[in-house]
Length: 195
Image (tube, rainbow, N blue to C red; front, side, top):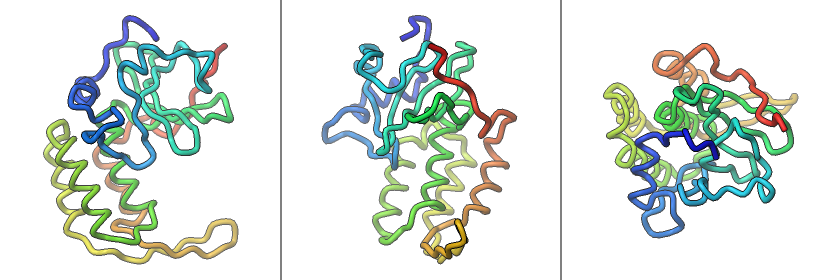
C-alpha cells in the first residue's frame, strides 16, 4: 500500500466504530463487503486478484470484483470498481462519500426488492450510519426514498422482458446522480493493472 495515502475520514470512522469488521457492529452495504484498515495495510498482493500500486482496496463484491481508491492523483483519490477478470476499472465516484450515496441510490433502483420493510430498514441504517458525512440535500433525498412505495419497473435486456420492484427507476436515479454527484470522469475506464 502507498504509504502517503490518507484514508478518508468516513472510512477511518467506519473502522474505528467496527463497521468494517466481522462483528455485531458491521454495517452491511449491498455488494460492498468491507476490508478493515488492518486488512488493507497488510494487503498481500500475491494473495489477491487486484494488486496494483494505483489501487488501495476497501471492499469487494460478491462476485470477486474489488472496490478501491484509484490514487493516480494521491491528493484526490477517486473510487473505482476493479473487475477481477479484466485490467480495467470503472470510475464510480469522485470521493468515498459520493460513492456511498451513489450506491444507496443504485440499490433502490437496481435490486429486485421483495420486502419493502427490509429494504427500508437497510436504507435507514445507511442513513443513520453515513448521513452525518452526507450533504443535507442527499439526506433529504434518502428521506424521500424512505417515504416511497414499491413500483414495478419493466425493461428489456437481450430481447427478454424483465419486471422487478424498485423504489426509484434507473432513470430517476440517473437524474439524481446528474444533479448531485456527476463529474466528468464518472463511468469512464482506467487501467488498474499496470504490472
